[in-house]
Image (tube, rainbow, N blue to C red; front, side, top):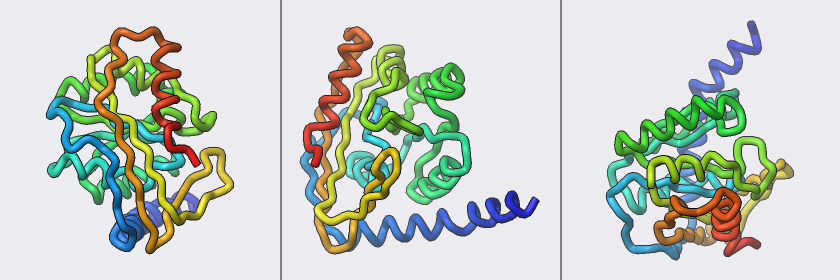
Length: 207
């Protein structure tokens, strides 16, 4: 009971604080966007590694002034925390992962893409292995014919956690380098070909 109450209280307060912290980091860093000037108005799948997702909302807002996206988030407590935090940036969520509840999550993701939503996904989330692409992003793209934009977020100054994903938090007063690919089409690729294509594209600027 106490644990549940503590978690409920944390989910009421901490996401708001986290959203302010993310805004602070963004505002106190210089920004460099190495990305196409514009992308299609059609639904897009935005993908980045799990360890780089903290500042992803600002790459999305670079292209969509009015947010219309849902992000795949795990269904346990960490996922609920992230879900509540990104609500402050106008983003919705799909709870679950393409590892657990895979069929339900894929069906829902395909449905919302067809409804006109963009999708945000971490191909190696929620639990890794790090920098390995799960099938979910490929299945979504091939079933809907949606294009994929690969995103890398590289701060010049950062803290890096000793977690499975080497989660990265920018430090203030550096530079955030946002890299985004052209819109990529994997609809005609074999599964393994698409997997390697996405992985290679997300490791172009690895430290």
